[in-house]
Amino acid sequence: MKEEQAIVLDYLSRGYSSSYTGEPIAQAVGTTRFTLLELVPRDGVFLSLRQQVYIGPDERKEVKFIKGRLEYAKLTNAARNELPLVIEETITANEAKYVEFFNKAGPISIRKHSLELLPSVGKKHMEAIVDERERKPFDSFKNLTERVNLMPNPVRVIQERVLEELQGNGIKYYIFTAPPKRDDAPRRYR
Image 1 (tube, one colour):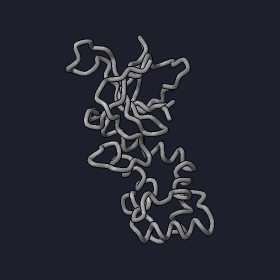
Image 2: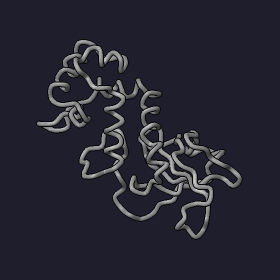
Image 3: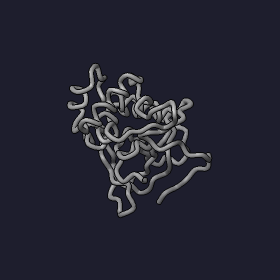
Image 4: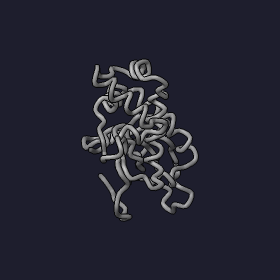
C-alpha cells in the first residue's frame, strides 16, 4: 500500500549541508503506513512544518518527486521532534482505523498475540481486550479504556509502537508501518 498523503516534518530550503546540489528537500511521514520519506518540492514552492501534501500517483501541486524512503537515523533533529506529535495527530484523526485494530487483531504465533506487541499491553490486558471485543466490538478509544480495566492510553500505546517500528532496533513484526526496504539501492519515484 503506497502513501497518498504525507505530513512535512522538516523543510530544508537549501538541502542538506553535506549536499553539493543545494536542492530543497523535505522530510515527511506518510499518513497511511507512517513511511518516512524525502520529498523534493516543485520549483518556487515553500513547504511548512506539519503541512499535508499529496504524494499519490496523480498530479502533485507541491511535490516534484519523492526522492525515496528515509531511515529514522537520518531524520533531522527538527523532524525527530515533530514526528511523535504528527503520529499522535494522525492516530487521533483516523481513530476508527486503529480501533478496528483492537477489534480484529489476532495471534501471530502459538505463544504471541499481536496485541502483546503494543507497549504496556501484556497477557492480562490482551485477554481482557479479546474478552470484551467478543461481547461487543469497541467503537472508540474512550469505549476501549472504559471497558478494559487499567488500559493504558490507546493513542499513546500505538504512538510508542509506531516509533519503535520506525527506529527498527531488531523489530521482528511490523503492525502499523511498512518494514524497512531490503536493499540499500536508492530509489526514485516520479
